[in-house]
Length: 172
Image (cartoon, rainbow, N blue to C red; front, side, top):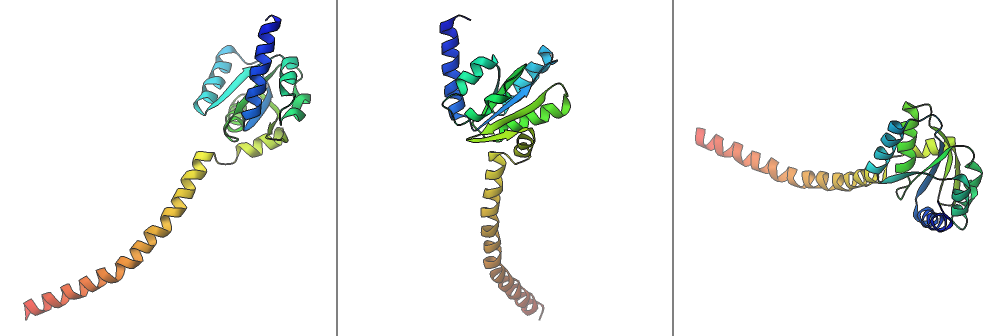
């Protein structure tokens, strides 16, 4: 990379860090190309991105962002996983690290909050935004269904009583 490319890369990464909901920093030493591509595709499916950047450039890109406090994590062979959904990147990275011991999560950031490896794992255990939305919609719909059932119950009971009287009259 020449200077102009580096400057452009740092600017692009800086903008990305500013809009990311969560950033995960992990050590990837020993991962094969196929494993790295698998991680990237899993992350892409969830709306996240995995990048390998020089530590020096990543540190420069973090300057002026909310996640500036995690610059100390960039030592050795590190990768950056990020997503706009604060749960997606930690969840995918944590799931991949469970199945592959060569990916070691070092920490990350969610907004202005720096996270250690345990913080990233705790964040990964939370339900995603889509799951939370589905639960919320389910909670909103459940009372409406119950109310409709309660309101309709007396009418159906009356209809059964009238039906029973009608059968009784026909039999007599």
